[in-house]
Length: 219
Image (cartoon, rainbow, N blue to C red; front, side, top):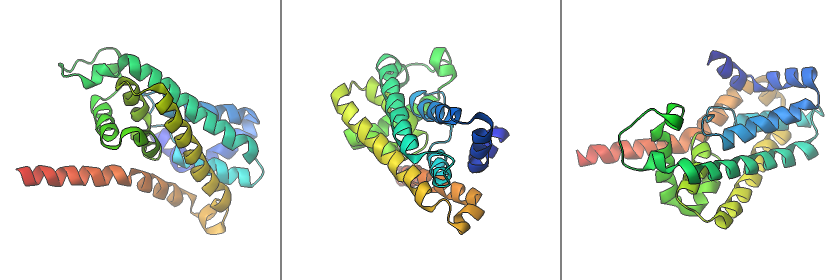
């Protein structure tokens, strides 16, 4: 866990090390990380926003080709969400139905409360939840899973999925490409990453605070 935290906070340094070590294979590594974070519900902890920002910043130095990077990561996010949707159609009901909690099968690896919170988010926002969730860690991983389990028509899901992936990668990687190499940003990259994480988690914190206030008012 400490190693993962170090990778997330110093993602720019690790990316440069990977580029020096693996060369063009780094594109495949980045594809695999984004695909796994969006497509495999057992990996919601992988870096997403910060990885895109760092990759964009490094592309601005010429170490990566932005013309390859952005389309590739858009495809990774679209493919990941599509797989997640398909798996959700088969298994999401196990986490949404009222039944005794049993740590068997997928439940050994997936927290039921994460699925249920994503389901509440999906119910509240409808189809646009697929786009909104793309910018919220953890929720991003579970909303496509829930969309599949909620029998959202695939044609509708595909539209929101493509919109979400293109917007997410364009904003996050594009911001890194434009601003990541500004001296003050580069010198304080760890703080910038923490800021990105805080901003992306802010909707969850606000929703949690509102739920807490509603609970107090009912009590």
